[in-house]
Image (cartoon, rainbow, N blue to C red; front, side, top):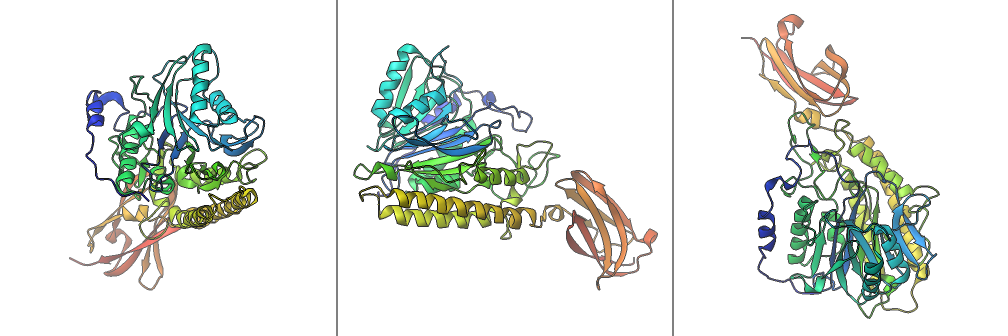
Amino acid sequence: MKSVKIISISFAILIFIINYDKGYGQTTTDSADEQMEEECTIGVANGSATSDGRPLLWKTRDYSSRPNNEMKYNTANPIKFISVSNAGSSTTPWLGLNEYGFSIINSVASDLSAGSSGPGNGDVMEYALGHCKTIAEFQDYLDATNITGRTTKTNFGVIDSTGAAAIFETGGNNYWRFDASASARGYVIRTNFAMNGGGSSGMERYLRSGKLIFDFYLENQLNYKSILRRQMRDFSDEDSNPVSVPYAGTWVSGRPFGYIYCSLSICRSSSVSAAVIHGVLPDELAGYTTMWTMLGQPASSIAVPYWPVGFTPAEADGVSTSPLCDKSLQIKDELFDYSDNTNYIDSYKLLDGNGNGLWTCTFPAEDLIFQDVDAFIDTTRTKKPLAVAELLSKEYQHATAALATLDDCYHSQILNITSNKVQDQTELYPNPFNDELNISYYLNKSGWLNIELYSLSGIKIMSIKDEYQGTGKYSLKLNSGNFNIPNGIYLLNISIDNKSKSYKIVKISN
């Protein structure tokens, strides 16, 4: 375990940002919703930066038109590997790990120049995983394809079993290498621009990721768990500032209460999978390099460990799609249920501040997986031969448990949870009231609304409203004279699609 570092904060990044006009990003409202098809947030760290001295490689994959991702085991090349690939017959890896501990990820760098022919981003990663044992061999491949050309414009992140860690900004006929060991703090971060490209795509996520990873580093908590839990499920605004969950507010006028606009966040509606690859020390077996993967939208998924030793379980690689990814996408549909703009997520379905929400169900289950795998790996990393059967058993055990947990959480915390957001914004005034009671309420989604008046003993006195209403803010007046309501204490019940709450109101005379 390394000691906590006390360092001065570099202001280079601040100078970098000042040189950009404030208009580089998307607007502060949610009007700029068109996104690149593939935008990812990636990073790499060597052992000097991590809490256990082992290298890390991570990626949140954003690709909205390819939401179905699977974990596949590839045996068609000289070196076997596992990867996250699009569901179905495709074997192209978009992040992966091979049996020698060499791992690779990428993020599109839109400001680099691609060649007109040659291997593309996925082709490069497939070749590297199937033929390279080390970063040095990967660089040899880049040198060779510099001459023949590539159709790449990307940032490739790589680690290997020697402890090396780097990012290669890679164009059609050139590349630039950024070693984690040469950086001030032992890690390198990228989104969708290159330092040698001059662009700024993904700048908001770049800045937010930099703040999070720096905090983990200072806390001596830069590890696979902090990245999976705290970075890959992070929400932030247009200024890269964190947004809390639940979000007790309205993002912009007319948007639903409690919904977070996350197009500029690391965790977004376009995020389709995420992984942290946890490397080994030089004296440990490369096969114990662990690929912690969340199939589907990270907020609605559970991380499961995989190793490059055999075919992945059916829960992660189904006949046509992955059941784990399918369940995550089913939950995602409920989280991102604001049809007017699907970049909004209902934060109260994640955590409602009262002990309910999806994460109160999924996070404890994920913690148990972390604990079990850590205990197992810590006792076997240096043992020979590689515990292949045990590793495959762990994959099956935790993939099966994760799927069952997601299904349970979907029913217990998504379908059956009572949302109080409509009631939290309900205003009744004046209360006590004489002639008129003003009732103001907000509907976070369309549904059948009932407003009814009851006596304290539970006897229904009248129905005030009974109709289908769309999303938005509404108000009405209850006139005691028109309805002949005598003085006394009553219960006003407001329900939307059978989810209700009662409020005590008092009628008094002048």
